[in-house]
Amino acid sequence: TQAQQQQQQTSAANTGAMTWNGTAWVPAVAAAAAPPAAAASGGGEAPPPAPEAPPGHSAPPPNSTPQAYVSAYSTFYQEWKVQSQQQSQLASSLPPGTGRDEAERRAQWAEYYADQSSRCAHYYNTVVSRGSVPQQQQQQLILLQPPRHQ
Image (cartoon, rainbow, N blue to C red):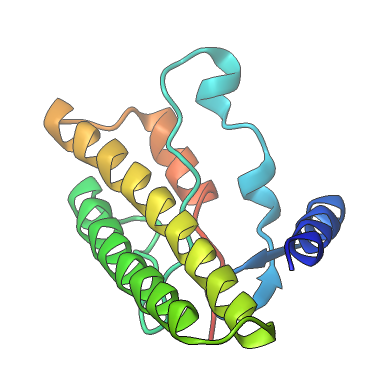
C-alpha cells in the first residue's frame, strides 16, 4: 500500500545505508553523498549522481571517456524504461494486492533510475560537446561511481 511504501522510503532515508538497484536493496556509496568539490568551491557544474546499472550491465570504469559515459548511461536509460513499461503492464494485469503493489513499486523505481540515467547521459554529452573535462571534475567522476553489484 501507499502507507507501506512511504514507511519504507522514510526508513531507507533515515538509515542512509541502503539503495534500491532495481531488484534488491544494496549498500549505498558514501562517496556519492559527499558534496562534490567543484560544486562546493563554485568551480563549475558537478556531474549528477551515477545511476544504478540495470541487471546485466555494469557501470563504466572510473577512467572512462565522457563518450563512454554517454553510451553507457544512454543504454541504462533504455533498459530502465523497458523495465518500467514491463512492470507497469504486469501491474495492470494483476488483481489488487501484494503482487500488483510490488510491480507498481518496481515500475516506479525503474522510472526513477531511467531519469537518473538520462540526466547523466545529458551531462556527459554536454561535456563531450565542450571538448574537455576539467581536472577537478575528472576527480569527481571517480568519486561518483555506483557500487559494483555481483
